[in-house]
Amino acid sequence: MTVRKNQATLTADEKRAFTNALLELKRTGVYDRYVNAHNYFLMSDSDSGDRVGHRSPSFLPWHRRFLLDFEAQLQKVDPKVSIPYWDWTVDRTPASSLWAADFMGGTSRARDGQVLDGPFAHSAGKWAITVGVDQRQYLRRTLGAGAPELPTKAEVNAVLDMADYDMAPWNSASNGFRNNLEGWRGTGLHNRVHVWIGGHMATAASPNDPVFWMHHAFIDMLWAEWQARHPKSTYLPAGRTANVVDLHATLPPWNNVTPSDLLDHRRFYTFDTEATGRPR
Image 1 (cartoon, rainbow, N blue to C red):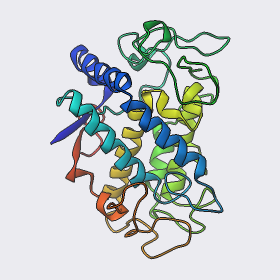
Image 2 (image 1 turned 90 degrees about the horizontal axis):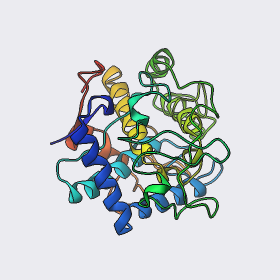
Image 3 (image 1 turned 30 degrees about the horizontal axis):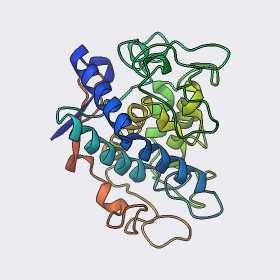
């Protein structure tokens, strides 16, 4: 069974194994297929039309399956690797170990946001950006420039206390847990983290930045925690609803997957939460 660990608890060898697997997927072209897929679905999702990966109830199961598929690719490179999660309620500054040169790298150039250190810096020659909003081939970040601070534990707990998974109009105007966690309402949460990191994480091609996977692994863990807090609440809508993926509808781009197949993460992995005290 795959165990997803807090990135702050990874050993030097575990960090190296994870970054090496990322670099190998980049080298073979597999990585950029996932960047393209995310870019496509974010750009095609809309409040008034079909919406699958974002602005909709299926935001959480879609990303769960997206991470599962990507994690399987990592494990083809190294079976011991899993996607760590980044608890940004704890590790919340550019000085956090996440951004050290032996892991994600963090130092960026003020004039253009180019990441200058770590394995994904352009100078290392192994992380050319091929899917993006312009022709620049280097990874970009502007840590802390786009949002004043990362979400707090209190802000997360307020959203986890919401009993309704989602509700009409099933888009970025909805109330309920999903939309407040996604960040179109309330204090921003998921969206605010993307903006705080800035650079590629603030675009539809956000998986260009490998921290994307750790951010979404934590979002996924928060969904699991919400389920534990509200065992009588479930995914909504349960029945056919225009423009969104209901509980038993096919979840594009997968032909044989529905949200109901993805409700229990324990079928696929567990979380090592000893460092945070959050439920497994």
